[in-house]
Length: 227
Image 1: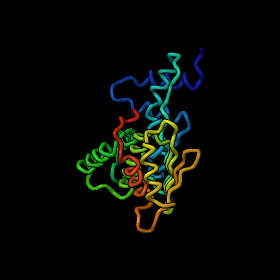
Image 2: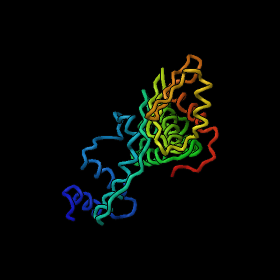
Image 3: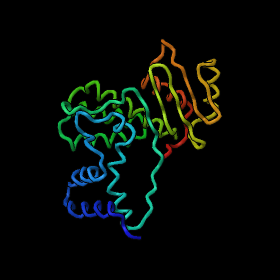
Image 4: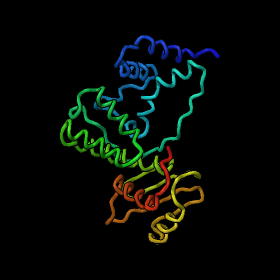
């Protein structure tokens, strides 16, 4: 079928920037076309970097697929809602292209070890991570674990944790039952597969509490990654 005007613009941009190393130029122009605004400046949204940034990094592949008349299939990504998701400060990593690359790498991980390896690389190359970057690393750890277990969404505050499972989530039901018994009413499982936990004062809260609870959910994880 005929390409939409937006698709034509995207493909024309691709054609104008075909030289080696021009991927960043194409991606940023594509974002501008879609009205994405400034995602990489100091006023960037931590939520974007946590739950949706990698989508922008795949725009060119989508444009090419649309040009070929293909239907683009996207895996369901875990949605994270945190009070503080973190980001890479411009003062820590001034090069906008490098920040884009590290956002992409962090958001595409599928294990806590992968996230920790990227954090170690940042430390080795650019020095100790500032607090905002540490927050981002913790958020991406939650996302990697959620992706591994097939969790649709996670909301974490200083008071509670909510985890949205799917029918095909790779979480062992026996582990969930065991946690429900251990928590003695502090954790509930609803009929629509939502786990809710109230944090005690002595527990890790927020994102830290989410990571700890996900480790408990995966304590009998002998299943392959959901990739």
